[in-house]
Length: 256
Image 1 (cartoon, rainbow, N blue to C red):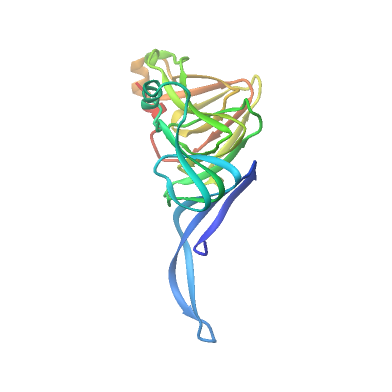
Image 2 (cartoon, rainbow, N blue to C red):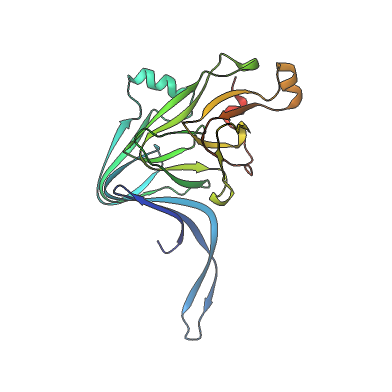
């Protein structure tokens, strides 16, 4: 597309992903030869291009724009188990119970979005990544999208549980981010180090970390006085992706 700029791309396993930033015309000018020229600026919207080279992708329902080539589409349930079981789990995670699978050879384009996109990947079939509520956008079909229920919640909100989308497997995937890729902070947590994060800053983290959710201060009265919601407490070894410049309220901070 001539009216876009590629801002990120990754390739692997029969899949080539690109994130495009859309542009719009700001003015016209004429060259010395009389040719009309367009001048464009970024307009704050983004699209994902998934070029399938024999592979396939799972896409968040409603995100499809168009496809070119020999592409077949079908609706797939994202997690093993009966429909009711998945639907109940989905109600707490913010994700749809189904995803659209595209496979074959060709290119799939997604609808323009005002949110930013981040391409990432996992290296091993048993790798797991937990995402912020509603962050899932696209994943290679070598991965499975499910949900993870936190049972280790302490303090005034204990017993309620909190669910997050979970990706398992090896492959490329795309998440929606409230901030540009350049503003996403990646923290490597080392053994014995520990990390405490406000729930509003969380984008995703690797599943090999030990995680608990708790109020920053003990006691419901103190929690209300402090104005703080739930915080994630990490230990072990793994990677955490944060969005410290985002202005939002995530499900983690309002759970319960």
